[in-house]
Amino acid sequence: MAKKESTFLTMVTTLFVITLVAAGLLGSVFALTKEPIRLAELKKKNEAIRVVVPGFDNEPSQEVQKVYVDGDTLYFYLARKGDEILGTAVETFTNEGFSGEFKLMVGFSPDGSIIDIAVIKHAETPGLGDKMERDKSDFSVQFTGKHPESFNLAVKKDRGDVDAITASTVTSRAYCDAVQRAYNALVESQN
Amino acid sequence: MNQWKNFSKGFIKENAVFVLFLGLCPTLGVTTSAINGLGMGLATTFVLVMSNLVVSLVKNMIPDKVRIPAFIVIIATFVTVVELVMKGYVPVLFDALGLFIPLIVVNCVVLGRAEAFASKNTVWSSLVDGTGMGFGFTMALTVLGAVREILGSGAFFGMKMISGDAMLLFILPPGAFIALGYLIVLANMIKEKNT
Image 1 (cartoon, helix red, strand yellow):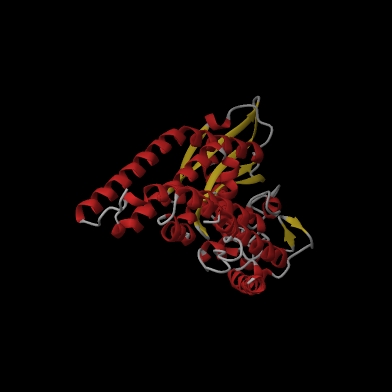
Image 2 (cartoon, one colour):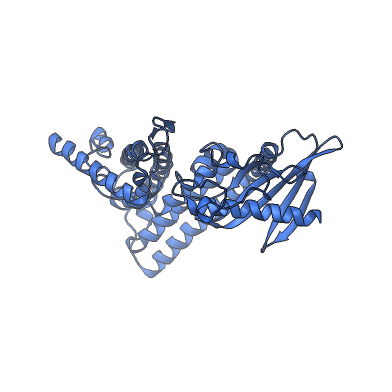
C-alpha cells in the first residue's frame, strides 16, 4: 500500500480514527478492569486493617464512620472480637508528602496508643520515601505501642521523638502529620 | 536484514542509555535499586514491543506530517492499558511497579524506536528491534541500579551486605549522574574494543 499524502483531509481523518480507536480501547479496558480494581483495593484495605488491629472477628469495613477533616475524609473502622472492642483502624491522609498526598491506616487501641501502621497508597520516591512501607525498612516499627500523648509525633530534627528515614525527612514529617491527624480526629470523636 | 544483528545492537552498539543517551529521565530517576531498574526496564520493554508492532502495522496509513501525535497516542494507550490491567489483576506487581508505569509515556526510547525504526521497517524486524532495544534498556537500568544500590545502601537486590548507611550520595540524584558517567566510560571502552 502506498504512503498516504499529507493533505488536510487525510491528516484530520487519520488522527480522528486513531484517537477514536484509542478512546474506545481505553474505555472498554477501563470498564473491564473497574470491578477487579475495586476488589483489589478493598482487599488491600481489609488486609491493612487486619495488620493494624489484629484479631477481630467482625467486618470492620462494614462499620465505617466518616469524619471530615482538613478538606478530606478520615474513615474509622471499629474492630471487635465478640463484644470486646479491640481498637479502631483509622484511614488517614497527608498532603505534605514529597509527591503530594499519601494514605495510611493507623490502628489505635482503646486507650489511644498506636498498635501498628500500614501504608495504603503513596507516590513517594522509590528507594527513598517508600521506605516508610513496612517491608522496605523498620521506620514504621518505632511507632508500635507508643501513645501520641507521650511520644512526640515529629522527627528528631523538629525536636520530636521520631527517627526520620535517612534522606527522606519530608516523607517522615508527612507520615507524622498523617498519624497526628488520625489521633486528633480519634480523640475528638470520643469526646 | 540480519535479525541477530538487529536484536543484539540494543545491548552495546546502539544501547539506548549508554550510547544513544535516550530515555535518560526515567533512567536517572528510578534506578535507586537494582530491582527498580529491572521492573522499569521490563515494563518499558513490553510497551516498546507493542508500540513497535502497531506502528509498523499502520505506518502506511499515517500521513507523514501527523505521525508524531499518532505515535504518541498509540504509546500512551498501551501504557494506560498496562497500568489498568496490572492494577486489576496483578495488584502485587502493581504495588512494586505502579509508580513507574506512567513514566513510560515520556520515555523517548519508545517514541524514538517508533520514529526511527518501526515507521520504516517490516513488522517482524520491528518486533525484533523492540525486543532487543528493550532488553538492552533493561540491562542498562539494572546495572545502573545495582551500582547505585551497592554503593549507596550497601545492598544488592535488597540483600543487605553491610549494616547501616553506605555512601548515601549514590542513592540521591547527583549519584545517578556520577554512576551513569562512569558506566558510559565503561561501555565506550567495550565498544571500542569490539570495533
